[in-house]
Image (cartoon, rainbow, N blue to C red):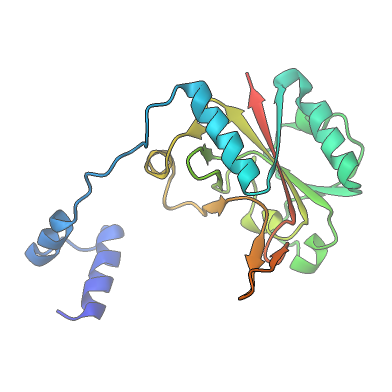
Amino acid sequence: MNSRDTILGRVRRALGEAPRSDAQASYETAVDRDYLHEHGDRTTSQTVELLAENLADYRANVHRCSDGELAATVARLLAEHGSRSVVVPGGLHEEWLAQTALARVADDAESTPAALDQVDSVVTACAVAIAETGTIVLDGSPDQGRRRITLIPDHHICVVRVPDQVVSSVPQALERLDPTRPLTWISGPSATSDIELDRVEGVHGPRTLEVILLSR
């Protein structure tokens, strides 16, 4: 069996099209998967604080509010950014945008990258947030929309319900996520550095990431 056969065999198994051979089963059991699912022993509030700290370390702007304050917070952030238009996923809670009169752009399958590039902001929910890495994960659910609406506009407001959507680690996040969905992992605003470590933001995603930690 060559490398090509091994890779294709794994793809077929993942799709449920082929049983595992003895050699493949032996390989999989030889991999040590007895890793920690969380580093340290934190309370729920400590986990949320770690998320906020790591989000800020990645240069995301972190805000906190309650359900009753969310609409005003979203409206304020859009106004402070100077936004004139906002992309709205089809399943986003209508009340989240109740206090803004900005032009709304639907998450339409026919929208082109050029059209989305003219939109100032996007507001979404998330699937899960990972405290240890300061990462927000989107899975394309109705309140998050297609991946491209969070990659093209320059300003992304993402709402995270705490503590319900917050986990400590990547292994814990993977347990909640469906691997067949279009997952987008976001650690801070889009940024890259050249060989001299000059940081440039907004190259392949939003230049500004606002994360609202929404308490119950």
